[in-house]
Length: 419
Image (cartoon, rainbow, N blue to C red; front, top):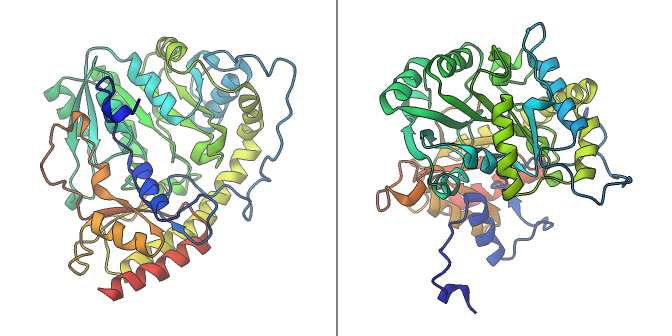
């Protein structure tokens, strides 16, 4: 039976990256097609580059690997993740993470879905703009009510501690969901600002659910000078009392998106809840991949990999920033984190000055971008019919290799000149 004619199924919206790659495939794009320049991709380049540890190429199968792994993840990896956070962010602090504070999940969306499924009947604050996949996630579970919080471009998408407190108290928020650094704007809440966020969450009993998948891609000088990594884990006072939920994994910060190994770090009671949710949502991750992840979290490995990321991606960041500005794009704020540039096409010629129009024109030149309207997170389409505040914006990725970025900029120059 054709699903289109079956009223039992609803139409499920595509996330921004899936939409643009689907449209590109209609014109011949393939994941191994060197003819295309994919500035829409949400993953970093995964190959070897200068200064980075050698990439894993083989994973042996051991006795028991054909069996299910525990829903909460294998204990060795949970202990390793806890040790990584304690070593990197919590030296000298009395309260330390243990394996009981960690759940291993089969992918970032799985981590987010487990957390969402474990939330109670609360108001959940989320920001605009933010990660496109949040939209369907926030509409799927009906226990909580999504409350949008608009960030202003003329203020550089800044959100102060005082504003956070006002939103929590004024809207009765029980939790806040945010990517930090933010996908797509690259804005980072770090240092004293994040300390204030954690203190507010503790005092007002509002859970902070922080998607930290880009926390090793830090470009803000004051934070980068301290090692180029940032996490709310550094500001937690008591790991089992402070309502801070951290989601991260190998996907971006270790450049192993295909492993589908991620984790949730949170108070023990929260980990018990998300593990129960995982038992009916996804059943747990792959045992061999989890075991292989252990060696990637050693102090030596993390140090050399994160240093190589800063050096190699820093060059690509500057290349893409300069190139987009030369083309006439307006960058609201240079990315303080992530591997994205959030830019407005409003000053480009008519026919190119809207994100969707530019996306379509670039596609003709075999360059993929992501229109900004996909990041105007709108669960349930409650603002349906209204023009998005980000209809002139696009997100450009410097996740691909430098050669791909250079090729894309040359082609985009042709696009702009043709208008």
